Length: 254
Ligand code: PGA
Image (cartoon, rainbow, N blue to C red; front, side):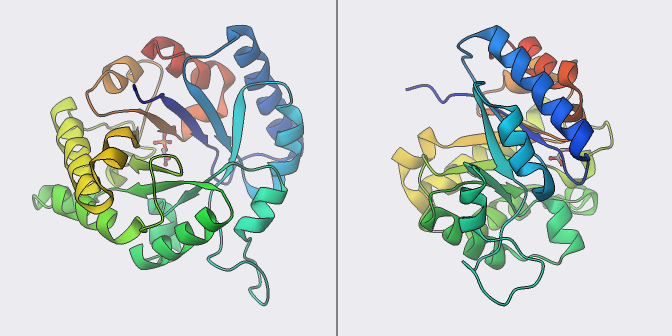
């Protein structure tokens, strides 16, 4: 069975009610025009827009996700949002361990692992992010960093149905720089091998591994046609309807 490509938009901390709703409606309209898309579309707006975006997406084959969740279900955790709450808002997915959270909030792979277990307990699919910094790449450690992050961040509750991995080199995020196709292939293959050891071959072969970091309509085909690349996690270009859809169209996956 071929892995269905996932085209995921990470809106990050962008969008107010008016423009977020307009963006979601625009995406919904374009996806409806495709009819039955071959790929899966997903948007991950900030928490404040989840309910409004859910409404705006009605009737379109676009899934809803959040950008983080707590490892706890409820209680005295000021400022946190639990997986139960995300399910209640209509989310199917949650992004975990994005490099911006690992950097800004000192999130460790161990915490990401706990959050993923909590998400799985409540039937949320997780997109677990890994990736090396420029320093680590230049020191020849990219492969080791990414595979170690996979080993530590992916919980035993992960299956191909409830987990997606995103390889996002930190230095490629929001910079317009992308790794060589050889480097992307090398890391994706290593991630799949690591998943195979951890979760078994059956899961590893069916689990989707996304590439993220400066994916645009003009490089989408090159990146998304690589052997182990099963979709894209898109930041900047997911904030414009034509760019977000353009990535799927140019890559020939929808
Ligand atoms: P970018 O972000 O597409 O703006 O580089 C990707 C991400 O951080 O998920």
